[in-house]
Length: 435
Image (cartoon, rainbow, N blue to C red; front, top):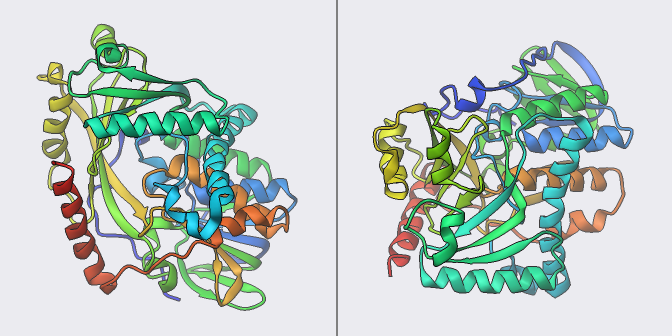
């Protein structure tokens, strides 16, 4: 199996998160040979939380990261911690049945709770703030909110949820662009890179060996898996591949089932208290309902972080600020004249059915994987880490099997054509939502 190839995207400029990181952790590159019960490839949320869960169960774990901990989507995402795993999970009724779909939804609640517990247990300073609101662009979005509210009540969702009319939306957002909202006080927002760095420190505290600048060049399968880097190798009983959108050519079977898509964020200069309060009076994270959605929130130091514009074409904007700022000003015209201090982007992983892919390779039962979170990775990665650890340790494997039962199609067109083909498909969806 060939090495991970860094994607040629110029969006990996220093982000606001990198500039405001509260830890400066450094881990050595792998040199020489070592042994572990489990080797994990990937130093993002999936890999870190799988390592934590396994270490807590008594496994020896070695984790390899090609760049730095949190270098990919885990350290550069919108920081929105939103309940749920997957999109429109009712599509799996024929495969999982009503009970299985309900279990998926409840695990979407658990995913956020895992983050809450991690932060509390390890004292991770990541600006965790509770409160989130979905915003309606169309009347049909309000109908969807009504159905979602009823379903959350039916499932016994333990946190405060409420519908907000257009008349009262000023409590949430200082914009007249939306028709209403659905507030969820069990979801929220945080500084994702500081969360990742805090979890890396926790993993190390639990005995996990972490290696940075250790790109995997080859995986040798067998009853014992050998993972080779340029300067070393790890032999392990089990392997977890947690590379998501950055898998490159490392594992062709998995690479064909996840599409890297670009998402972009700008961060303004620090806003005066009054202006910050005018924009988001309740300091909630918010998201609209369009295919090319906008998502935004305030940082702890009163910057507006505004993101969205998911790109499937494989081409990044030449100037992220020039691309994103007009979108921001449509929502908040009061920000005219406010400077943008940071611009960055990165790749999220998307599958054909938008359910996280959690399972093991069909011909290599000791090789596990999790990927394709479709923009909900901050919480779903934490759930994936728990499910992978449960399966590897032989505990509660039924939850892992629930995800593994769902088939995931390979994107058509091969590596060169699958992005353009999907971009055409998403253009069709965008045209549909105008009517």
